[in-house]
Amino acid sequence: MEGEFVALVVSERPDGSFERAIASRKLADLPPNETLIRVRYSSLNYKDALSATGHRGVTRHYPHTPGIDAAGEVVESAGARLKPGDEVIVTGYDLGMNTPGGFGQYIRVPAAWVVKRPDGLTLRESMAFGTAGFTAALSVHQLQRHEVTPESGDVLVTGASGGVGSLAVAILSKLGYRVVAATGKAEAHDWLRQLGAQEILSRDDTRDASGKALLKERWAGVVDAVGGDILATAIKATRRGGCVACCGNVASPELHTTVYPFILRGVTLQGIDSATADMPLRTQIWGRLAEEWKPSPAALAAIARDITLGELPPLIDAILQGALRGRVVVAL
Ligand SMILES: NC(=O)c1ccc[n+]([C@@H]2O[C@H](COP(=O)([O-])OP(=O)(O)OC[C@H]3O[C@@H](n4cnc5c(N)ncnc54)[C@H](OP(=O)(O)O)[C@@H]3O)[C@@H](O)[C@H]2O)c1
Image (cartoon, rainbow, N blue to C red):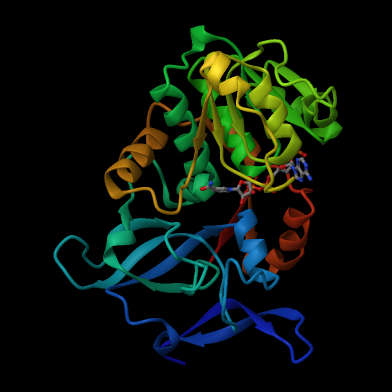
């Protein structure tokens, strides 16, 4: 029927549990924002799995369509900047949180959230990156801002087989850094080397139980997607003047540390917030991902696989268990 489209809809049952179904939605159900977009691709991020399982810190009201990433064509937009047919990317802000997200064939969002697809990136490639890749790139940007260069020394990437981690490995390697990838998946070692990791550590090797405030200086930079003890250990082993980009909490949101790495080694702990990155920075980062930071076609092909909306539900459970490798692109 006209004005209807297909979406993944998460609903709360009377007993407080949540169910997912592919269902028909109406354009009239979308919020009255300026820009209507026909979504062609989305992607699966950890936050989507939280939204899809009733995590109130991400999504307050159900029924709801998750999907913090979307790429597609503008159908209509108020204002002069966007016109019908423009290919665009929307990631972060409130998309997929309390605004119906990219796991539906249409979204209606504020024009201020919309990035025009840069030349050098297809819509599908933009979702192979998605929020995970944008976050990995923001982390690399922060390492560079803190003067961590390929000459500075090794860069540690934790949660390396995940979305943020695998793209951080690929981007850093493309830029000439010596990347050490930490992973809990023994079967992912060869794959991580293929993406450009020069050395692999097991997850256990990255957790220090000595109780020492400082460890031997090892990392010029760190991209940490996991938090908790692994982040605390990485900070203790970061070299003088180094930078740790903190972007995730799959292991734990807690961080127990002392001030010594900061006051004796001048280490920087840099928070990464992709959802609210301002538009000039957003445009700059997407531009780099389309050009000099873009991993090789072989690396991108190894990282991202394609699925349909109907194939998404079991993968939502897999990402919550830390069991996914790389990225999942959803075709709509
Ligand atoms: N700050 C931001 O703006 C931003 C943006 C995007 C994502 N994030 C956050 O970044 C994190 C990663 O997101 P993602 O989409 O990359 O998720 P993901 O694809 O599931 O990757 C997370 C990886 O972390 C590792 N891991 C999982 N559970 C773990 C545990 N208990 N202890 C240690 N390592 C564990 C696993 O990799 P291995 O098996 O290789 O160790 C897993 O593949 C999430 O916390 C997400 O919310 C933040």
